Image (cartoon, rainbow, N blue to C red; front, top):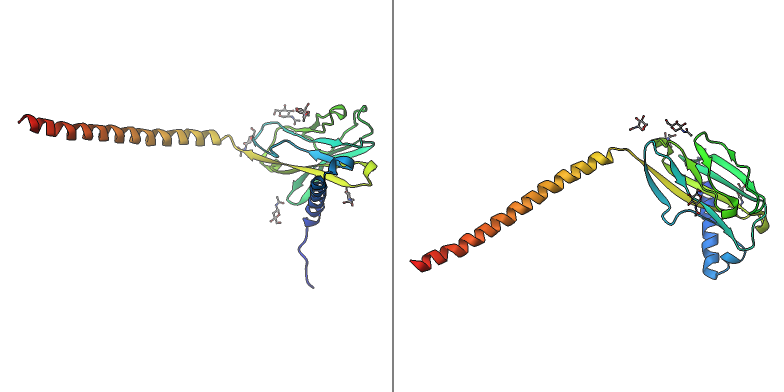
Length: 200
Ligand SMILES: *[C@@H]1O[C@H](CO)[C@@H](O)[C@H](O)[C@H]1NC(C)=O
Ligand SMILES: *[C@@H]1O[C@H](CO)[C@@H](O)[C@H](O)[C@H]1NC(C)=O
Ligand SMILES: *[C@@H]1O[C@H](CO)[C@@H](O)[C@H](O)[C@H]1NC(C)=O
Ligand SMILES: *[C@@H]1O[C@H](CO)[C@@H](O)[C@H](O)[C@H]1NC(C)=O
Ligand SMILES: *[C@@H]1O[C@H](CO)[C@@H](O)[C@H](O)[C@H]1NC(C)=O
């Protein structure tokens, strides 16, 4: 009757194994020799406002070249992988025929530029989470590769927060100026008093 709570962890386990594999190969300097690499932006995190349209970047690279490279984008929705789009890139000269599984997803990459980025239109708070760019090159024995891009959705309320911050800074600034003026005045008075006494 013992229940094993391991739902969802198997998927991230596979992804992590893929990442580690490439990392350890990189250490040996052989990742470039036979491995496919999937990469997102330098900063794999984006903060965007509710209602905006975002670019989810991903590029691939393989030293041995690609043939029938399969790629896909998934959204990790509470540990459930939701497929957003997928396609096969036959070669770098042929643009893929991308199947879209999500209404607000648009493929904007190009095989020629090794770019498989997508646009996610009109984002909502439910779109917040991890986006996985997955790739498999049959040339290298079905090894899986992936990169993760995290999307944070923020409300326009942050602008109100900025106003509040400005107000707080103004108050603090005013207090600081008042304190300085007070201290200068005090110093002047203290200096002035003995002079008055000297004259006596
Ligand atoms: C998010 O944006 C949409 C469209 O601009 C708006 O209808 C909705 O109320 C916003 N949600 C929140 C929680 O601000
Ligand atoms: C996400 O998962 C947690 C438990 O794992 C559950 O309590 C929660 O309702 C889920 N949320 C959604 C939106 O499915
Ligand atoms: C995004 O929202 C705009 C305005 O609400 C709408 O015209 C457009 O069709 C939407 N795009 C998608 C892909 O849903
Ligand atoms: C990939 O293509 C998109 C859309 O054309 C572009 O905005 C992005 O800069 C490209 N990324 C790279 C790394 O070239
Ligand atoms: C690669 O991913 C596929 C799912 O797309 C899975 O069926 C397969 O077992 C994975 N292979 C390895 C070696 O992880």
